[in-house]
Length: 80
Ligand SMILES: Nc1ncnc2c1ncn2[C@@H]1O[C@H](COP(=O)(O)OP(=O)(O)OP(=O)(O)O)[C@@H](O)[C@H]1O
Ligand SMILES: [Mg+2]
Image (cartoon, rainbow, N blue to C red; front, side, top):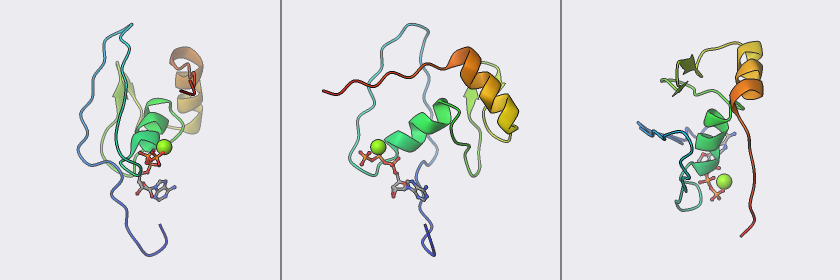
C-alpha cells in the first residue's frame, strides 16, 4: 500500500468439504475479504499457493481464472 508493505494473509491453511457451511470471522483488516477474493478467483496471491481441488489459483492466466469462476464459484451475500 504505497511505501508500506501489508502482510494481508500469512501461511493460511483452510479446507472445506463439499456442501459445508463455513463462517469466516475476524477483526477488521484481518484479511477476510482478500481471502474470499482468492477463493472466488477475483485476485491472485503475491506469492505462495492457492488451490481449489486440482485447480491452481496462483500464477494462472486471466482466462483460466475466468473459466474457474464460471465452472466452480457462486457468491451470495447475506446482510445480517
Ligand atoms: N488492494 C490492497 N492493497 C494493499 N493492501 C490491501 C489491499 N486491500 C486490502 N489491503 C490490506 O490488507 C489487509 C486485509 O484487508 P481485508 O480487506 O481483507 O480485511 P477484512 O478482514 O475484510 O476487513 P473488514 O472486516 O474491514 O472488511 C488490511 O491491512 C488492508 O489494509
Ligand atoms: Mg472485508
